[in-house]
Image (tube, rainbow, N blue to C red):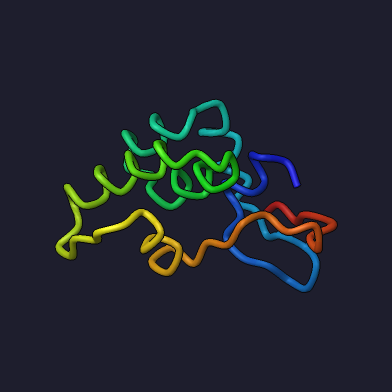
Length: 97
């Protein structure tokens, strides 16, 4: 699965990822930190997970905690908050909507 598809996936249908094509086309060029700076926390966190970048995940956590009424202690807490799992080889296609 390509990075942009993973970052902007909004759900799954069997072995296909459902991707937000409008957000993907508008924000795909942004790196993890830029996505977080734009307030796109879920996409930013998914980007950090895709890249296995712990420092970027901590940055997203810091930015998210600055605006969230609930403060989280670890970046991995965002896995549950945003429903994020590492990329899977089981996903064989995408559907952009």
